[in-house]
Length: 346
Image (tube, rainbow, N blue to C red):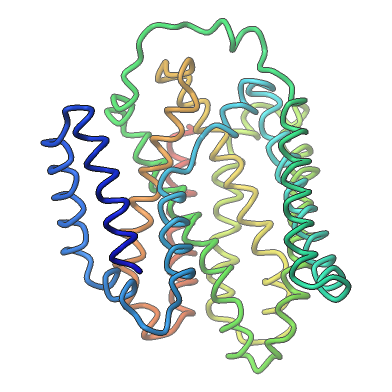
């Protein structure tokens, strides 16, 4: 069956390329794919593993490709809509809707499954997706200033000539890795402390609720009453706080302290992340790429994913000596980020 599917799609691909007079291009693309597979034996072993279903393999590959093309559209839309002054709080506000949806869907999952089984879950998912698409038509349009933006040609990749671009890419990659640690290794921390793994669901729901405090906190901290100089210090201060929390989480074994840190770590990570995203948009304006904000942010996000992959590969040995060291090292990196942003904000 697999060979038949391969032949169908292979023939279709060659047919399209023949019609487009691009067989040489097709050959180069095939060579590129082969080189990628030859240089990633672990990935090939994963695809050939007999205990991993085809569905799981397809899902992993699709999610991986999607992650590499993370779009900057959402961030660009909010920044163009609300500007520098409103972007920060509105971003946290938008994220809170996503968090609320996650909490509601997680709680409702068990009830829907018990009443109508998998079929009920699928129907609910389809209905909610349709509602989401309908709601998207009622989103506000960007401001006229954004619509009538300067249309001159912008060389997006030229943004990397500025050293600040690399600082944003590396910093946001560290934040992505920090989220991976929270999402995948909280359970191991529970086990190491002798706490029931069954608590994990309640912990996730609890820290998700705590995360929603980011909006009022950022609204208070970024209030114009605190002065411009105070606002400029926020990225460094909040990143340092997150770094200290990660360091403590890596070394502390006292159960009450571990549980408290589990609840507040995501919030402490959200605060500097939102602030850096705000600075990233300001940097795009400084680089005169505002007319292509979404595309520019997407390119920067791809850089983030590349650095994240390289960092994860280099840090694989840390998991062998203990996951606590991953939290410690990420904490150290967050503190370095805090120092760097404190320096450039002077």
